[in-house]
Image (cartoon, rainbow, N blue to C red; front, side):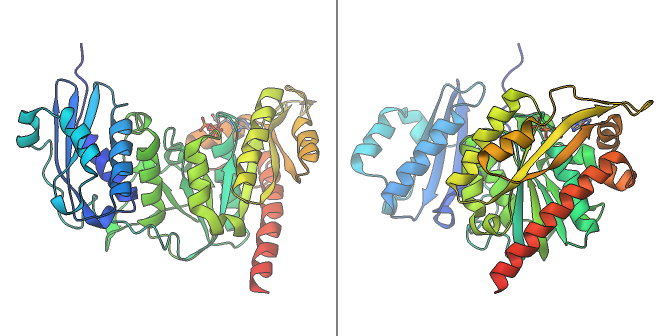
Amino acid sequence: MTQPDFSALKDYVSLILNEHELTPEIQLDGLTVRDGHAHIVLTTTAKDTEQLTLLKTTLEKTLALHEGLTDVTVTFTAHRAMPSPAQQTATQKRTTPAAAHHRPFLGKRPPKGAASRPTPPEGFLPGVKAVLAVASGKGGVGKSTTAVNLACGLAQLGFETGLLDADVHGPSLPRMLGESHKPTVIDGKLQPLEAWGLKTMSIGYLVSEEQAVIWRGPMVMGALIQFMGDVDWGQLDVLVVDMPPGTGDAQLTLTQKLGDKLRHGGAVMVSTPQDIALLDARRGAALFEKTQTPILGLVENMSYFCCPHCHERTDLFGHGGARDEAHKLGLPFLGEVPLLREIRSSADNGTPLIVASPESEGAKAYHTLARSVATSLRSSSEGTAS
Ligand SMILES: Nc1ncnc2c1ncn2[C@@H]1O[C@H](COP(=O)(O)OP(=O)(O)OP(=O)(O)O)[C@@H](O)[C@H]1O
């Protein structure tokens, strides 16, 4: 039987700490794992017991999901800001006396200024004028393919464009852009990788897919928040975000964190013509309404099949569902992208179709989409300027 791997636990704790409001006042002091029980020791000078309790609960609940762990205990070691006596007693009941005094480290204490140090939540994306979320209610509908080609289309129209892969569990940007370098760090900032006229960042540049797949809730959020705060995006007209599929807490938190920037950009919903995917797109649209994010419209992907030999068009999934759905939801219909072998093969080969074959039928569909989105971005920025 293979033993569970706990080597990434310390990084997860650091990610969660980075995301937390109390970050500057908290440091990871120790982390031990014994017989499925993890014990985390944090030193703190914070006085806000409510926040400390919240952090303790987040850490305990999140890390308990890690394979091989049965329970997790968090202890604060500085006496100036302990949780209330009742909370402290509860912690002590679950902590063996030996564990309370014995603090071997799984890893070295993080150096000052390293991953567990503060990332101020304010000042996200300071040079980015607008954020464009490319989203879908369910996976596999072609959201990433659309995001990549749309971003390249916007760059070709003269927009300074970035592309962030927020699909942490299934990062596809490295493959679709043909990029596999590790980003460098300059002055504490991750440098985005340049590809096809875009500044790009993906968790896939930093960790293996297997590592990212086991991340849960707050760890994912921690990584994304680092991507917003710790990446040197520079000056961008628009940052296209390939959102994780679905409409859960991660998506909601992300849209809330991107707040204002999204209101200057908006959301593009991607759907296939099948009813089930459309139902999910409806849920996705509701998510953006909750956060007052303008929905620029719906794109129908794999809309129809065009035979590469005779060019006959076949509506494999029942064509036009997304257009009808967009009308029902009162949203603009941004266009249809055919199901084409070269869209898939160019994505697999690392050159987006709009770059590899700009005159092709598929590229024309992406150009139409990019022009519609560009019009919305321009009118949004004129609205801001006036
Ligand atoms: N219009 C299209 N024609 C042909 N193949 C397509 C088209 N759109 C996407 N694909 C292919 O479908 C597969 C899924 O696409 P993609 O990864 O973009 O979906 P996704 O919605 O981002 O999925 P996930 O949510 O799982 O990341 C890929 O192999 C991609 O190349």
